Length: 378
Image (cartoon, rainbow, N blue to C red; front, side):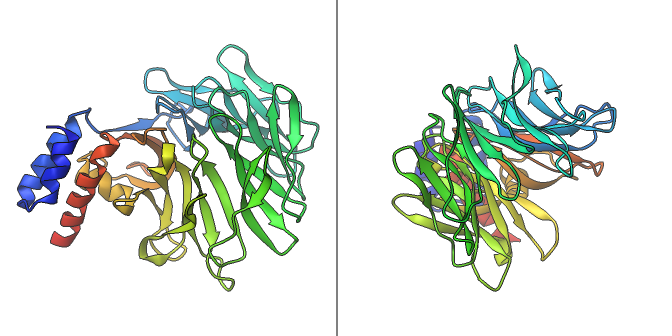
């Protein structure tokens, strides 16, 4: 049964059991949904934090506890498991992102409080090496598809945003407030996103290109917005923004040149943040609070279904065995939207990373309909 056939059937009136059967057929047509725990660098499998994923979803990066009780950046694949990237300072490091082709890992090494941190890049052949930024504090947060363009921040109070390529490092400026941080870059390396202070009055998400310079994206009504990721094609930006000057709460947002800043909402109208976005802005992932000051829940968003709790989606629709898991944050999504990586609490109570493979994105409308029916039947 093709995706088109599935969509046509969904448009009609079907018994609930028939719809579930249809979801099963559609979900397995292009591969089975899977849930995989990311192993840590510690033999006891303690504490793993996820930060990025390669374009094809085959590699995931983040930070893990080691057998020595320190924290080290890692790159993980299902075939090879987790490999530490090493460190340059104080035996600690954090992998913040991986290039789309999976060849380059970037991040920082050293402690983040009271001591120096240094931005690095890592490759399988060359291992870890400093980016050579002359600053007491620097971190690389994003890399282009081939890893030849790297973005991040250096200095502290005020932070400075940088873009680095073969010609060297460039300070890309700010929006008038003296502080800025670059957080992600498009696959081709031309478009950078992040946040910057504006005239010492507010903080805004920004988009930067060499042609246009840094452009603020505004807010959802509050005093601050932050861009955390950009789609590989450079057309969609995601992040979070305060929506009220009297509140610290904020909502996940999506931005593109046609629609501007779009509020993605939040479950129970609480705080939410979007961490990553797939090609063309089709799939957005992040986290949302389910109670004030309470735990967060990972979410997945698309235009057809809006914001959906990934815990419910994985159990009720994808039929994955995640009993005992709390999927708290979806941090990264592959270019095609078929792989989602994040972290949360394992059944053993450990903070752990995971990867979910979903069926082809074309079946999301059908699966969203099934999830909606399940909610109505409860």
